[in-house]
Structures are given as structure tokens and as C-alpha cells.
Amino acid sequence: AADNNGISLSVKAERYFERGGQRHIVTSFDGDPVMYTLFRILEAKGYQVTILEAQDDFRKISDKLLSRLRIQGAYAQHTLGHDTGANYSLRMSGYKLEGAGLPVGGLFLTDLELDRVIRDLLTENGYSITSK
Image (cartoon, rainbow, N blue to C red; front, side):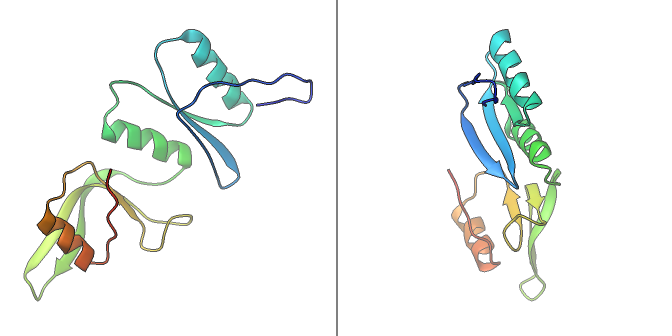
């Protein structure tokens, strides 16, 4: 961040991106009070700072990021596929996200391991699967 007074502040962050005209920083917190203060200064300058901690799990990280991005979502069991002719429905725990600024059809986030059969069912129901 730079001011018109010739002072610039540079801090290490895991991720930086812009969305909807807002600048976002994602970083981890290791207990250093100076770094914490520097990130709070960036917030005062208009940056959206998401601080992740070592004990944060999938749900905690997702809640923090979705909140900062102002995306509505709650962790729950969601119906992702339903075929009355085949007599099955597929429900999965995670975040189902829909709305402006998201891909058509929305996004579904989960930390569950998907076996081949579930992947095939999701693909047949129009889902695109990205895993890491």
C-alpha cells in the first residue's frame, strides 16, 4: 500500500487478488504482533484482510473467506442430484454458493473425498469437479 506522502508498506501474504473493485489479502498468522498490526493498517487503507490460523479447518477457513468476500453460504447437507426415474438422490455436506459474480449454476465447496461413483454422478448432473 502506498500513500501520496512517499511512504509504502509491503508485507508478505499468501494470496492477493482483486474482486469487484476490492483488494483482498489472505495470510497466515504466526503470533507476530508487528505483522498483525501491519495487516490492520492495510485494512484501514481499504484492503480486505483474511487472517488464517494454523488450527483453522475447512469450515473455519471457508467461513472467513466467504464473509470477507460477502458471499452468502452456510455449511450444510445439500441435494446435488435427484433422479426420480432412477430412484436416487445425492446429498453432500459443504457450501452451496449461488449469486451474482459466481459462475452460472453456482459453486459447491466440500472437503469430502469423492470416490469414482460419486464423481460420475456429479458429472452426469452437470457439475464440473476441481480437486486439489
